[in-house]
Length: 355
Figure 1 (cartoon, helix red, strand yellow):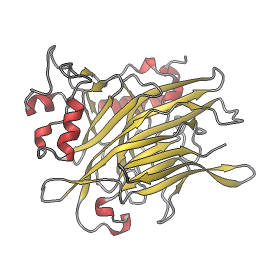
Figure 2 (tube, helix red, strand yellow; figure 1 turned 90 degrees about the vertical axis):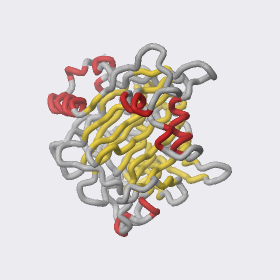
Figure 3 (cartoon, helix red, strand yellow; figure 1 turned 180 degrees about the vertical axis):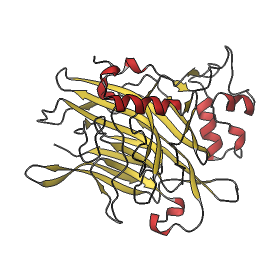
């Protein structure tokens, strides 16, 4: 495995800059029980606080689930999200980029598929209520991946994430995000799975775009929960949990790149084909052939300027995005699609439609 030192220097610098803006909390002491801990203790370790919400509300249930162990009486396994960079292959440090800007209603993308919502379902061009999205969460089963039929590329990549503000249709868009990545190596016919985070920024050419690893073991078939919560205009709290292990990371705070803020214009659940280190979204890695999976438990919170109780939003008004690729000699085909299912429960089904 190549070492991280073999990355281009600007990628190494970007990783260092991102991690310098990241605060990882200490591990709680032995015997720590999050279900009996005070709100102050939970916040100290970057954990959700159920009492911040009305009992029985979606936010209360979501917070309680994150703190609950796999079996009654058994504690959650907490780990620090801080990862050793040298434990990851060079190709892991790809670039997760925003959806290239497309005028409404064109929802095709070169590198994204999935769904996104805006406050009250408004189009980006018609935001007028002053509300902003301050929280997004979702759960998915990590799909097994392979090379497409007839594929001859050295590697195939896909990333799955939840994030805020990724739509590039407005100026100064940014994108704090967290999720998993899937890599298939053609030479060894093996697939690898990792957790990661990033804060991408539009119109800030000096901002870092390389993803950074999260210390959470991931395998195909694992159920992953992830969330992004805004704690200030320039700070988010990221959380990710492996429900299959189950192991929860302590939530960790990330500060926005210099000059950036969270606008709360969109929230998204996305499957992406990332870009090689230092590349751009028009030349991404070829997409892995992935098993169908679904985003479930998709919830967003919308907050009013007056600070009133957040409103929970589901995927009823989500706009869908399909991923396309250009195939020589020049025709376009769809390679990944999303479909909303509202009954018997809400879910966003993701399907590979490539060769």
